Length: 90
Image (cartoon, rainbow, N blue to C red; front, side):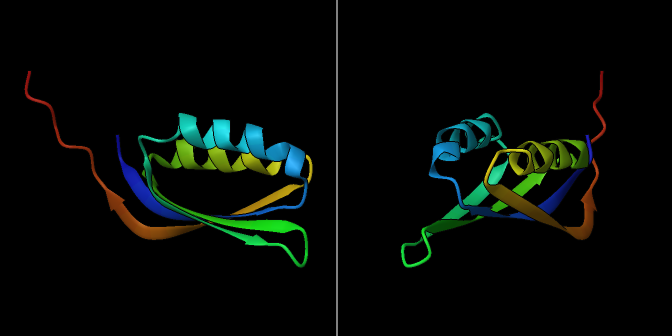
């Protein structure tokens, strides 16, 4: 399946959503290249950046699930490079 590299930017304003967010990220763990989290204590929020290399449908599904969490917002930026799946020889 073709894959793309993307970055999902997440802002968590509701600490109760963190467990569910981590569960979603764990499910996508095979595709995640890296993760950076910054607690912004002065504002009471967490800022998270996820680098991911996955099929586009999977990326948008994950981003949508994250964005539907109460008190969480997510935006995704995609690279223009699409990696084609290698043809399988049966």
